[in-house]
Every structure is written in C-alpha cells, then in structure tokens.
Amino acid sequence: MTTSASADNLRAAVLARFVVHATPADLPAAIRDKAVRHILDTLACGIAGAASREAQACLALVEASEEPGPAAAWGTNRRLSARSAALVNGIACHAFELDDTGGCDHSGAVVVPAAMATVAMSERPISGDEFILAVTLGYDVARRVLEACGGYEPHNNAGWHSTATCGTFGAAVAAGRLMQLDTTRMGYALGHAASFSGGLWAFIHDGSQTKRVHAGRAAEAGLLAAMLARAGVTGPSAIFEDRWGGFLATFASASAQPEALTIGLGERWRMERVSLKPYASCRGTHSSIDALGLLLDENGLGRDDVERIEVRLSRFLLDMCGGRTVDTLPEAQMSLPYALAARLVLGHAGLDAYRAAHRADPALRAAMERVALIVDEALPAADEPLVRISTRDGRFFETRVTSPLGSPANPVGEAAYFDKVHGLCGMALAAPAVERLVAGVLDLWGDPDMRWLGEALGAPRQPPVFE
Figure (cartoon, helix red, strand yellow):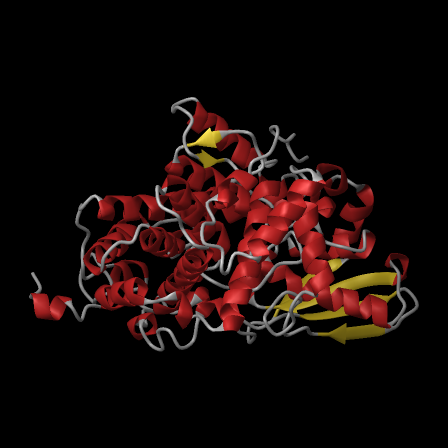
C-alpha cells in the first residue's frame, strides 16, 4: 500500500494530472491542425468501414441485445448505446486498413470512436476545442504507453498487438477528459484501462478478422474504464511501476522504458509523428509500394516490362507481411506480395484494389509470383526495405524509400487527402452531406458545441457489404 505522498509521484498519477490540467491553449497551432486532419480521416474511414463484414456482424450482434441509444453507428441509420457505438465504430474505422498509423499503432480508430461515444452521452455542450484537445491527449498517452513498452518492435514482436494493448489507455484518456474527470478519477480510468488491455497477433497466421475487432474493443474498453472511474469505481494506482501485476511488468518485462511515459509531457506531442495512410494495406507495405512506383515511373516501365521484383527486408517485416494467401480481405491487406502486384497490375493499392474480383484475378496472382522476398538478417526491424526490379530486357533498377507517402516527413498532398476523405464518405453519404461534414470538421476549432457531429455521421440506410 503506497502512502499518499508517494502515490502522487506514481507515473499514472503524473499522466492523470497532465491530462486533467491541459488546456486547448496548450496545443500548438500545427498540432491542433494536424489533429483535425486525423479526426476527419478517421471519421471517413469509419463511415466507409460500415460496409465491412466485421462492422456489420458486430452491429447485428449488439442490436439483437439492446435498445437503440444516443450514438450513431457511423455510415448507417442505426442508433446504439455509447459503449456499443465505440465498439462498432472502432471496428469500422480499422476494417479497411486505411486509418492512421504510427501512434499506438492505429490511434485514430481507437481514440476517436471513444471520444465521439462520450460526446453522444453528454448533456452539456462540448466545444470543438475541448474535443480536439481530448483526442490529442488520447493519441499522446497511447503512444507514450507503447514507448514505455520499449516501442513498436519489441512489444509487437512479443506477440502483442499494440493497437489493442496500448490503445485502450488513449481511449480512456480521451473519454475521461470529455467526462471532466478529476485527477483521482482519471487515475482510476488509467488503472482500469491497464486491466482491460489485450490483443494478440495470432490473426496474422490465417487472415482472421480479429485484427479489426481489436480497435473497437480497445475503444469500448477505454470508454468503459472512464465510465467506471466517473462512477467512483477505483482502479489500481501503480500500474506502470516495477511490481508484480503491473502493466509494464506483465506486458514488457524485458523491454520496459517507463521514463517514456512522462518525458517531455506537453512539449513534444506524439500527434506529430502519426501518419495518414494512402494505401489500403498494412503500413509495413507502404515503403515498397512507393519504391516500386518510383522505379516504374522514373524509368517509363509498364507491368509487362517487369520480370522480377525483389524486396530485401527485415525478418520482422517478412513475418508480418510476407504472406501470399489472399483469399480473404484481411490476408490480402497484410500481404506485401499482393500490394506490389496490385501496384504493378492496377497502378494503385487503394481500397478498390482489394476487392474480391481483383484478389482472384489471374493477372494479379501471376504478378505475385514475380515478387521475391529476401530476408536481410542485419536489417533492423524499423528499417524500410530495398526494392529492386529486373526487366525482361535485362536491366536492373533499385531504390529504398525511407519516408513513405503519408508519413510526417512525406505528407499526402491536399488533393489526395481530400480525394480520400470524399471517396470514403461517399460510400455511405450523399455529396451534400459529405460537404457539410468536411467543412464542419475543418471548422471544429472555435465551435462552441460540436455535438452536431454525431448526427452528421449517420446515413440514410445500411450500406451493402464491401466485396
């Protein structure tokens, strides 16, 4: 049992104080503007993801067991309880692998649905400034928890899916901040989140749909953590200390770096390192997609000119994205050979490239056979692959893209960003509704009451399943 004095210095308590006492004015203009872009991107992904099998199955499941509630199932005409909405919308956000990455990893798909579910429950006006701050704090804490686990490589290489394990903390922070929890209760929420955390990479071996569920489950769990804390249910306080049963001692016993939780709080916002995804595939494939595109475009090559595509990559990336079975959408989206085949044959790796008809296309299947993955055991897991192509007339070209399109160092252009947002929203909403949504989200900062946004995410009807 810790004393009150020592309890005030526990890492969870430091995080709780930071979250509770931060103000919108603390956000640099560049960070708040980036946060707005990520919020809009996530909402667009969720609206489109309503057409996924996973989101529709989960929606049917919760509708069968509860009455309609205050929260919209985005991209549909259904209403759910706040917790169910966080679950369904989180699944939808991550369903098509287009949601942002580089946070916890997929922070937006966890944090934004939890925050929006909290807004749906609110009886008071919530300003756009409050909402943007809460979301940014959620991104910040979720990423810090992953860094405290030693970072992406050791945590995920140990078998934990960080979107599910670390994202829960971000959802709890965003929801708790919008609930106006005090420091004590915010600490409780973090304590609950630690126990609700979980999620394994087992899905990678057979293309199961569990990966998409992880984002929704983390959003729901974080929301529940904040709701319990608001109700006065206590959570453990020493979750990040070196003791039996703590989060880091359990999830990262060999790699923990607990100081990462609090270093530079409020100075270096983790939002600045998050990437927007231009391709509907695992982020691990993006550098190679870009490299292949550069080699084709710079040398005037078409798909019939290419004899072989050789990718020299890390063992970690091979294990994550080396699969060649693409019968299901999840399998294809985690497959580097398929991503390169799509770029070669179709000219892009957008969502349409992953439709069942393309996955079964003999031309794409044949192109996959021209992709060779070669492990470089000396290559660190975080390093991008080297892509080399050989042509049918005996020429060779190679390159490595160190900052893939969509990363902070190589951002997606304005036109491409809005094309993505409009295209995804247009899968469920009419053009005027899309325009109102986009304009409203871009103007969230300074909006005295953004509760209108929940209504704007609904659609006239249930979308057909994406095939």
